[in-house]
Length: 77
Image 1: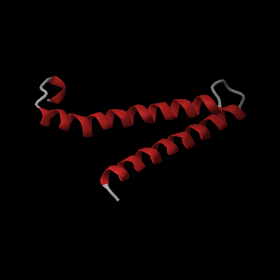
Image 2 (image 1 turned 180 degrees about the horizontal axis):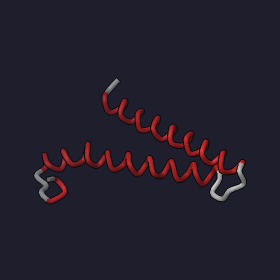
Image 3 (image 1 turned 120 degrees about the vertical axis):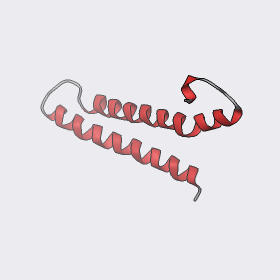
Image 4 (image 1 turned 90 degrees about the horizontal axis):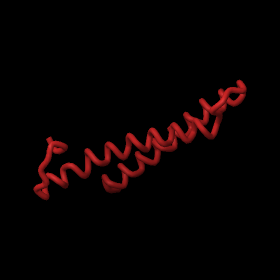
């Protein structure tokens, strides 16, 4: 398998793990009768994991590509 496929598989696994963790937190809150139950916590955990993954994708994959193309700027260091 290629490295890109394994990286994409890792992103998927991390996203699913975030959903499961959010579901566990949400289930506990929902059974306690508190606001922000199952769906809300699943969404928040998934969105935060996705935000981190997209940020890592930009830094790891796109910044070196921009440097090869000769793009200059403060963001490239």
